[in-house]
Image 1 (cartoon, rainbow, N blue to C red):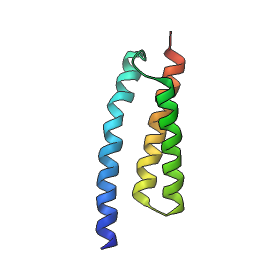
Image 2: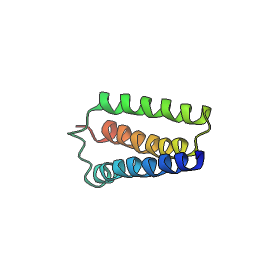
Image 3: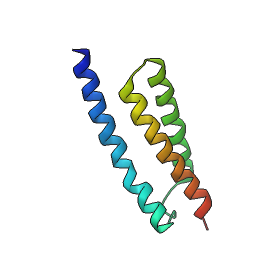
Length: 86
């Protein structure tokens, strides 16, 4: 039964992580960060970092996988926001 739970977690992790990637791509291509809120991005980044640490502590591969990728994505948006902000 635990294997099914991990599979559900992995599927959810892939979908929620993939949902974030189009924004990273669009921001990278257009360099338009006007609609992005830096405080929201920073809170999101810190929250994802917390989830990643939690995933490591409970040894959840799906949580580690999803949050590691999302952490990179959110870091990129913070970086783009700071770099391209007018």
